[in-house]
Image (cartoon, rainbow, N blue to C red; front, side, top):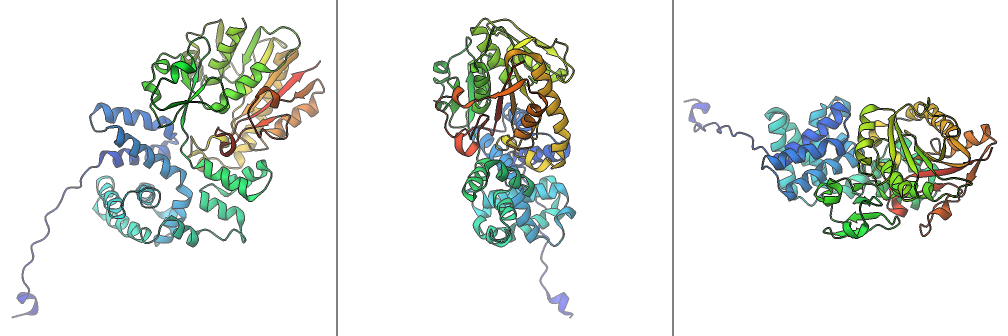
Length: 472
């Protein structure tokens, strides 16, 4: 009798169908949309969560976990890529993107959450079986077991170069930002290790939802009756939902009397509205108004003074969002679809002008973490002509004695002070106003006369504002 014939017969294991985990499948679907369609998570995730709740698949805890998995994975993508690269036998670019998304989700559960190791690995492998198939699930299992051998600090010691040898690359890996972004933010801060470490860490924190009570339509007292609501730190119209509340559950938000708006954006609008003028104060312009948050606050503030806001937006669909945000404003206003670089209004028409220009968005990486991986240094060159043209239009649109607010949601010097400096060189009929006194109680606004807000100092997006008066 042969050796093989003496072995006992072992029946093959019966095939087990993969168990679909709705939370992790939804998180995977959101990451694929971000990767494949260049979508933004804050636009993709809400409808996916809403559909899951309507289908009865999710409760509040499921929604919170799915949100953490998506945003946590996107924020830490650079760090996780460096770790995964150490655990695979091929260049990372040769790993199929859907496989990499499952690995990144698994890495975040292992290194960035309190999910037990065995649960993180098994749930990720099961997700791989559902969305990738059994073959690639084995690969996922092998890689995640390697990742599970160390905690996050242990991995950072292995994959991040020492700070003393390459400080920018060290910070890029440890804090999950592209190297060029680290360098740009460091320049904007003015040097020093402590500040840049705090800023990069703040970019990776989940921001609280901030609401704005639109004057004449809602009050902070009304919003403070919501669960876990506290007053904002700086804006008199701001209320924060400290436990990640759902804005759509707030009656004033559903009715458009209040909105979701970062406190930094509120401060920009307030500073422009409070700037001293010479002469009348009757006509205001928001020259890049979409999607309408600042326009809605400005329109409400204008109405209190008997002034009128014109909200102009180039893109028709964004102009529609502006009209929705302003609907019900207590005073007169107008929403138009127009290119701010070729305005339909006459020179010197307005008393106050806000020009919140298109930019790289490096000041809002807390809210749009995927933007840090999409932006490239060459994007600065693409935005520069538009930013300068829009600021030139703004100065031309304001009357002599009127004020322009130039704002960006980016602290990059090429998008902030460089643009303003170029305008002042070309226009002796313009002068900077010290904006800092217009935000009393807000500390550390910079050396002036412009304003730079920071996530790690003010708890806001990194909004920039320069106020410019037309003098002749």
